[in-house]
Amino acid sequence: MGTLLEQLGTTPERDVPQKIFSMREKLDDISAGDRYLALKLEIHHRIVTEMNIEQQQFLTRGKQDRAAVERLISGYCNRVIDENPFMVPRGDRQTIISDVIDEILGLGPIEPLLKDDTVTEIMVNGPKHIFVEQKGKIHHTHVQFYNAAHLMNIIDRIITPLGRRVDEASPLVDARLSDGSRVNIIIPPLSLVGPCLTIRKFSRDIIGTDKLLEMETLSVDMVRFLQACIQARLNIVVSGGTGSGKTTTLNVLSGFIPHNERIVTIEDSAELRLEQEHVVTLEARPANIEGRGAVTIRDLVRNALRMRPDRILVGEVRSGEALDMLQAMNTGHDGSLTTAHANSPRDVLSRLETMVLMSGMELPVRAIREQIASAIDLIVHQSRMRDGSRKVTYITEVQHLEGDVITLQDLFRFVAKGVDADGKVVGHFEATGLRPSFMEKFIVNGVEMPDITVSDASADERREW
Image (cartoon, rainbow, N blue to C red; front, side, top):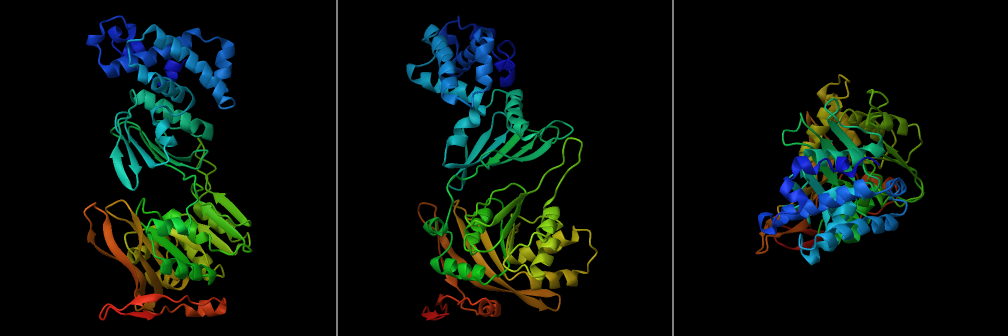
């Protein structure tokens, strides 16, 4: 098992004053936080010194019979607390027991954050500063690690089962937890604030159109229009900044794909959850410790073309795979979907140009723009607003190349009017009323354009699209 104090990354003699660890000084001289820490360290010390080999082996199999292991640990906790009844208030007994169990079986101080369904992202900036995202806003927490060694041991506990390592020679790691949560790790010397850990939690609930409408991410007309676009096999890019909800929207859009089609999904870390039956999920693989064996998104896109897909879904294009994705869209794989980081629909085009150039193919800029204009039909741009909410701010058609410029046309947009007394962004979604030029795809695929209510800005009247 290794000593639990080693797993903790600390020893009482080094990190806690002897007067605290001995627990024999007057309580007035010891702060409440120090008492709490001292009691936990004493419990760890007793577990290490008193647990027999059979119990240690049982402890290492904790996930197989967690309830029994928790009872074993609770017994040690209760004995130490009973021997030191004045160290902490009676009401903190269960908290201490839970913390020790999380330290041994879970991910230490951040285990409660992982269990909290309201927390969507956990950001650890060194051992003493931990932030979380809740309801789209970032908050500082009171949670802390003991020191950098403690945090590094928790990081090792995360990545070791994944066959990964992090050290000075390899200080960057991207990984995925067993529940699908994404993990990014960066340590010194690259990080100057100590080890940094970012966990984007994987939602247990599948978010559908009803949830997006409830959260006012988009309007009913926009949902009906996008559903028709998916059925008409338009090629769509979902764009937005970090944390804007691109993957969630992509997952919702993929739900409109007919169940009789073969779908191949390609991601760095598998996050998409499709309910269709005929789905092949591919995930990129990083290089091993020797720097070999990497399989990139671009490799998977090329391979997917040989798998007879009806649709290709790429979780995110960020490099040379953009060229392969555009070529797939231009060679019979209509209805493909992907996401890209960008600040606006126009910025998506610039980003795609840059990514194609990163492929190593020396193509003229005009040729790249022709590829983009002919491949992509629609850009769905999403933003995170100042109140933490996510909204589809533009649904923009990619039309054609005029000279050296790709022309765009907004079909829907979100019009912000300000914020209310509670700080909530106030505004409305509106259709521009402009007729898209991709109607031929609707006709060819036998899809009817839904009736869309359009606002006339000049007369403030309503008319049907």
